[in-house]
Image (cartoon, rainbow over all chains, first blue to last red; front, side, top):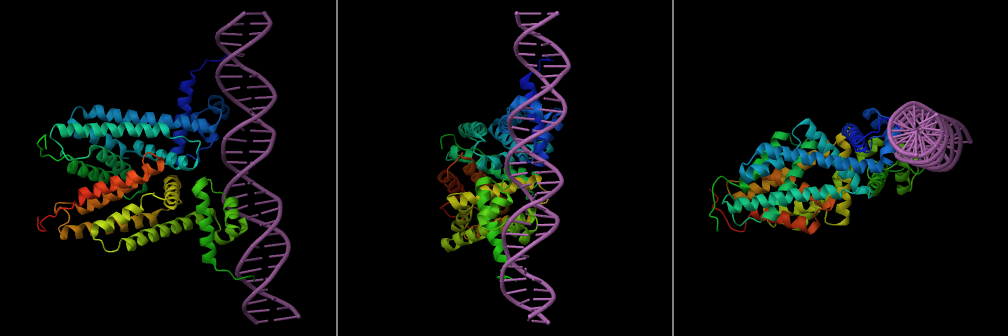
Length: 206
Length: 206
DNA sequence: TTTTTTATGGTACATCTGTATCATTAAAAT
DNA sequence: ATTTTAATGATACAGATGTACCATAAAAAA
């Protein structure tokens, strides 16, 4: 046999090419031929490693989710241990499309969401579960902030975590659609975090 | 000539058919032949009344925006004059996909958003302007609430209005994606409105 | 060295896409 | 009654799409 190639590596390579094409043409407009050219391979190879296009899409979706995880983790490490407020801000800021890479990410993400709404074969389950994990982390941080007297004791941390995730998603949409720029979205986000975790302290027991 | 038909009426009819198809197949998957069949017309007629498909998409987008306006206005009238809180809740609740019609609307809306991100010819300007008007209405209602002593004087009404719009959009996304059901989303929304406009009063001058 | 297996290229195929063309009905204008 | 014009139908066309099939180079196994 020839080179005896690493299949997983090849799949990553192809998936990355798909995502690059999808960033400009959209997911539905990413044809196999164009993806093959972008990856520097033949169409036949995409068939060989994925079989059908739908499987390629699913694989690429997981690839995308992993990218997001990596980005969030990187920001978390960069934020260090600045306390709950810093951690939450790091996570949610990453969710905003503030640079080209991030914008590309969100464009493809939106494309996936739209596709999954009408294409039942496209299961976005894994991505939703990732979002759930993040939401739970935020809730935990809010609880920690309460315990440290940095947040009002009356706060419903579960509802607040859900709200923050939704706020972040909504702001992202606005930035993508052009209604807001990244700086404005960031300002809104920090304003809400300030309202949630103000500088002043509360008595730990209410 | 034959029947001497009302062009605008025909266009509405065709646009409605497109949206009906798009609700199940997605916007990108709504072929002219299928739309024609759905409308009970021939493909040729769609060409006759719209020329190109892109113009049909643009027209349908306006059609969709008008539908949304109508829905919001209907809810506003139904809400009567229950004060700022009731008005804001009416507007934002309408934005949540709580029934089949509303869900269909949001599916198509998301499809449009995704398309417009990669298809430069699809100008979503009008829709963005509609959203801006709604946001200004909400800001005005918040100001009214402040003046009536129903909201904290320190509130930045502009940022809060933007936040509420983003929150609503994000919640809608979650409902569409299946992470939340409509009831949960509504609960989150009302929780945030309670936090913003609590039952208790403030002194009008701070 | 022969045989088997893996990796790859090329290409043909059926289907679907939006659009263009040719033709026709029928009402209004003259 | 004739001419013009609005409205509609049928169908052909060029291109793109995902997939299937046939071939082959080359490395590992025998």
